[in-house]
Length: 154
Image (cartoon, rainbow, N blue to C red; front, top):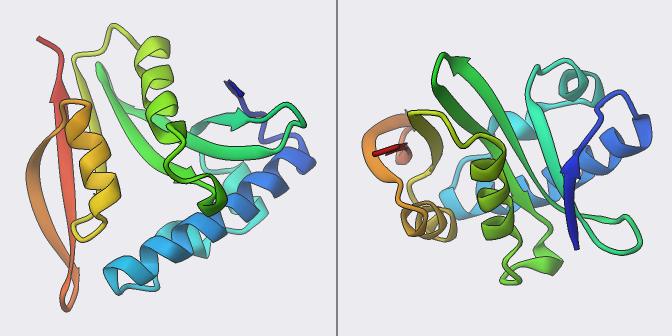
């Protein structure tokens, strides 16, 4: 397995990313009871123009097993905008490897931010394992909450 920067200008890469995103986020949608998760609304074109930086975890055959996207929305702060792992590759440490990669790529920032569906326990567990602390819970639909986590550099 290797982690590398993904080029959204490459149609093959973007297609793999789009397919991965739809498989992974459909499961989260079921888990939290909300089908209108923004990544499920993406097209290949909207992915290419989203302005986020994507890193992918690939196997030896160059198959995309997982990906993370980040955006520096304000100075000194990095938002992890997407985290996805193909369901066939759950519990293999891919999301943790992607998280470590993000911290290695952006070591000098004062804050990292990530949000997930409050009922998405695997994601909540991942983020708290990496030192993220819940700071806000937002209701996005009846019975559906989004938790935002921060990790501040000490």
